[in-house]
Length: 148
Image (cartoon, rainbow, N blue to C red; front, side, top):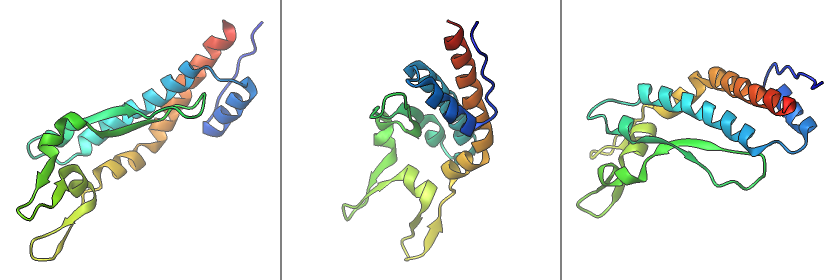
C-alpha cells in the first residue's frame, strides 16, 4: 500500500522531493507552470493600460533546464512584439517600453519619472497564492506518482 504524503508548505515540499530522490520532471514542470500562470494573470491585471500592448505582450517562458528536476518559468514580454516595444530616439538611443514602465525613465528635461513596478508588485502581492498553488499541484502529482 502506498504511503500518503501530506504537504503543508514549500519547506515540506522540498523535503518530500529530497525523500523521493529523483523527482519526475513532470511534477516540477506542472507545479512551476501553475505558479507562473497565476503570476501572468496578476501581472496582466496590474499592467498600465494605455493601448493594451503591455498586457497583450506578456507571456510565460520556460527557462532552459540546467538542473534535473528543476523547472523555472518567467513572466516576460514576447519578443514578437519588439517592433511595438523598442523605440529609437533621434540621437540613436534605444529604449524598451516595458522596462521604462516597470523601472521608470529620465525625462527630456533631466527629471525622473518613477516606474509603476507592476511586475514586482504582482509577484509580491500574489506570492502566497502562487506558493499554495504550486504546493497543491505538486502534492497531487506526487500522490498520483506514489500510487502508480
